[in-house]
Length: 302
Image (cartoon, rainbow, N blue to C red; front, side):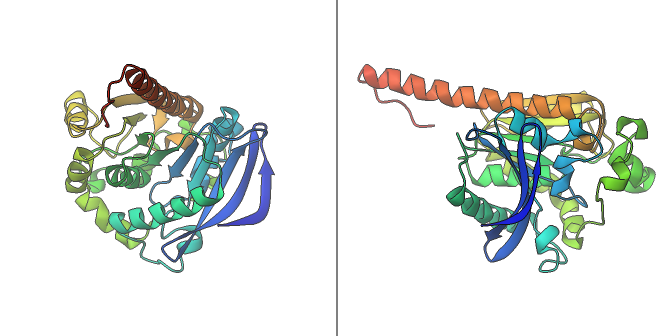
């Protein structure tokens, strides 16, 4: 792992650019760390199609940055430029499949954990296509603390031809601080991601059935990519039959790109509160096992 010299202080910590190695592929990232103490845990943030790690450190207004909010609450945040973006864009001009991205990112996170204090463990937080990647990672590696996904369902809301892409991605413009659209860094996604999108309903059904950690699924009030009526959300929740907890929530006053809008702070605090509950689950599980051992009883292994 290498650290770039660029550093930016926030009221709650320090954000700097780093580079990670994942199966021979160099990935760039933003790392936010608490200012004066080791992190409680580490949040790995995965951006959506056409975005970058900067999605989670929006500069249009201080309140929208996940890195600032999370470090203030004692978490480290590693916001990755997914394979095909940032430092790996030239190497992977067409991107990677979800399965290949998961392999690359898993190796990069092993590199990161070998050189950094991660606290109580790693939580996954993904938006849109990054949410797809987070769920695939969660299916293949049960050791994560929990997974939070926004803007990613299981049934698309009709054809993109019926709704302007701008409206699908953003919703009403007043949901975002002034300057958002000049600073978002939005660009065309790699070709491989466009192909993967058509395969997602089948991919999710397989991945969701194998997830055995807590899951939280968040949808913006003005979500226009996915079906979010009650019946659709019940179907979505039922896919995660092996997860110990599945929460589905709606984010008021938000469009699809929640983490860039005025609702970002409320959404980020809610996601971190979910992770806090996951940490309590781990503490309670350890305590129960210790209590059973004191009584001479073998505790079950999850």
